[in-house]
Image 1: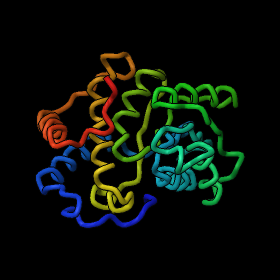
Image 2 (image 1 turned 30 degrees about the vertical axis):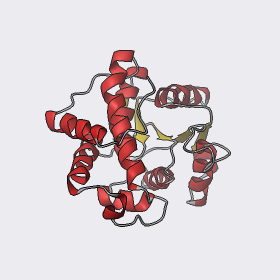
Image 3 (image 1 turned 60 degrees about the vertical axis):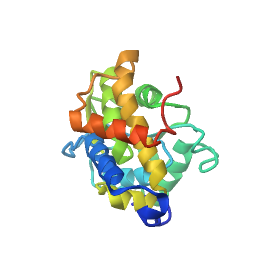
Image 4 (image 1 turned 120 degrees about the vertical axis):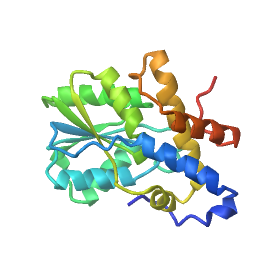
Length: 229
């Protein structure tokens, strides 16, 4: 379950039913719906959502991988929340949940998704872990971007995406800030669209209904997490 406080009713944030529906369309698109299966290792991508670390611990206890890398330094949205870095705090949370220390590797420097993958690959190599498949554990709406990035940065491994299987309303309630969640999902979709042109990720098809929902939410002002031009 995500960390946070219950979110107020949507009306208090002036988010319309149509905007909520558009957000759900984008939420569904971002998830890859991969079937969980055993992998050589897992990478848990740092973020503001400690729920990703909770889910990573659950997957470890389910026996889906023998070693787990927590990756991430800080960003403007996490510096105050995790002052010692995302990976450090995520690791400590996993230890509290019973993941043994010798099953955890730490990658505390990544500042973006490409670095999450590339730096974690080097940490795994340095530890002598042979990897032919990797489970990418992230926030639910970050699955597609993580997958597209891994296929570009580390194409020789099979990438399996995984996240806490929550519906959109439950996820928003757990985070406690629906505007932040929608803004971030819109920003992630922009990256899915734009990053292949920059060489950061593989191309992903964006269905017409998803693109239309994205454009409507942009026009409505859900734009605080867009790439800086």
